[in-house]
Amino acid sequence: MKIKDIQEEIIDEFGIFDSWMDKYEYIIELGKNVPKINEDDKVDENIIKGCQSKVWLHAKKSNGLVQFYADSDALITKGIISLLLRVLSNQKPSDIIQANLDFIDKIGLRQHLSVNRANGLNNMIKKIKFYAIGYNNK
Amino acid sequence: MDIKKNIDSIRNDFPILSTSVNGNKLVYLDNAATSQTPNCVIDSISDYYKNLNSNIHRGVHFLSQKATEIYEETRFKFKKHLNANSTKEIIFTSGTTHSINLVANGFNNSLKAGDEIIVSSLEHHSNIVPWQMLCEKTGATMKVIPMNQEGELNLNAYEDMLSKKTKIVFVNHVSNALGTVNPIKFIIDRAHSFSAKVLIDGAQAIPHFKVDVNDLNADFYVFSAHKFCGPTGVGILYAKQSILEDFPPYQGGGEMIDEVTFEKTTYADLPNKFEPGTPNIAGVIASGIALDYINGIGLDNIKKYEDELLSYATQKLKTINNLKIYGTSQNKTSVISFNIGDIHAYDIGSIIDNLGIAVRTGHHCAQPIMDYYNIPGTIRVSFCFYNNFDEIDKLVNALNRAVKMLS
Image (cartoon, rainbow over all chains, first blue to last red; front, side, top):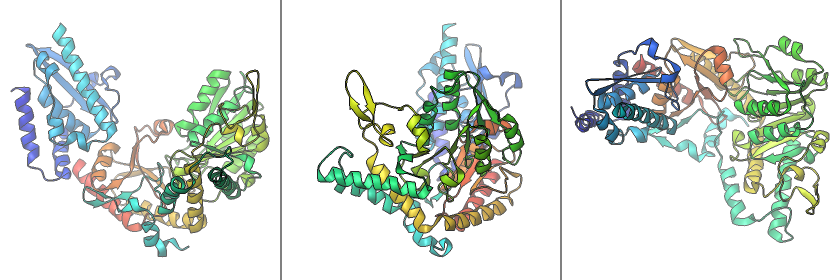
C-alpha cells in the first residue's frame, strides 16, 4: 500500500471517535500490539533524543524496502510510533524521504500533544527520514 | 482566616481556576511548578502600567518618585516578612536561579583549589549547576549529602563531610520533587561551626510556612515570587549585609554605580549594587501585593489547611493498587510524588490532562533523586491553599480511569 493510502486509512479510522479519551484508548491498544524489539537493539545509539519517554528506533533494508523497528517505555508513545511505522515501514527509501505526513495533523494528534511530545515526534520523523536517506544513497 | 469555611471565596480570587479543559473544569495540582495568580496581583500589574509606569530611582518627576516609593516599600515588606535586619539585605532578581547564580559569582574570587562545597542530594538542577560551574572555575570540589528511602538527608554523613575545607553549603528548605522539609537550622548551625556560609533555596518553603532568616541565621535565602501567587520573573535574594558588601557586583550597568569615568567606576551602596539596569518594577510591586495576599490569609492557616489536604490526598491515593509514594518523610509540605505499578508517568499525565487535571510528570529538574530511586520520573501533585478536597477526589477518579486504560 502506498504511504498516502495508509494515511487516508488512519484518518478514516480516527474519524469515528468523538473524544480524545476514545482516541487515546485506541492509541494505547495500538501501543500494546507493537511487537517487542530485540533487547540487543535497545542500545543508547538507537535512542531518539528529545523524547520525554525513552524511544528506541532502528532500521533494516530488504528487497529495496526499509523496515523500521521501534519501542518505548511509555504506551501512548508506543501507540504513536506504531502509527508512524504503519505508514513508513516497508516503503521505498525515496518514498519515505518525500512523504508528507499530514495524517498527524488531520487526526488532531499534533494539536493534542504537549510541546515536548511534539518535539519528540518531530525527532522521531527526522530519524526515520535520515535512515531512508542513508539507504537511498547506498 | 478559616480557609475551609472561606474556600469558595478564596477560589473566586483566582480567575484561572474557572478554566475549562476539554469540557472539564481545570483541576490545578502543579503548584510546585508555579502557583496561580489572584485578581489583586493581576490588577496591581495593570494598575502599575495605567497609573505609575516610569523609571525608578532616577527621575525627579511625580511618577518616578511615586513608583520608587512603592518599589522601596515592597523591599521593606520582604525585609519585614523575613525578619531581615535591613532593606540592604533584600535584593530583587529575576528569580531563584538568578539569585543562586549571583551568589555563586560572589565566591568566584575567594574560592580556591582544595576548598570544598557541600550540596544536598535533594537539590533542583538550578542549585547544582551554578556551583558545578564555580567548581570548574576555581578548582574547588563538591560533596553530596546522601538521602535515605524516605527522602530525608543523612545528617550523620553531613557532619562527617564538614571540615575546615568546607566553604559553602547549599540545601533547599523544601525539596521540590518530594516535599521533604529539611532541618536547615541544624544544617546551618553545623556549617557555621566550620565558618562555612550557607545558601538556602526557599522557593518551595515561602509559599507554605513562615520563614525567619534571623532565627535560622541563614547567610543566603532565595525564592521566587511566582511560587507564592506573584508574577513570574521576580526573585528575592536575602543575604547578610556584611557578605554582600564584600561581594563583587554580578552585572554591570546603570543604577548600580556611584561614579563612572572611563578610568574607573565606583559602585553604589546596597542594595543597588546588585540591581543594575531597570528592574521588573511592575513585577516587584505585584510580588509585594502577593505577599500581602498570602499574609492576609495567614501562613499558619495555610500550613494547617495544606497539611489536611496532604493527609487526605495521601490516604486517598493509597487506595489505588500498586501506587508507590516517593518521599515519605514525616515532615513534608503538600507535595506527593508517585508512580503506579510500572505504568509510565507520561502516559498517566497525558490521560489525566485530557480530563482537565494538571500535574507534573518527569524528573522535576531533580535527576539525582530519580537516579537514587532508579526511576525515570514520577507523577507529582502539589497543592496550594486554593485547592479543595473535591479536586483530590477528581484526581483519584481520573487516575483510576487512566490505570484501567493503561493496564
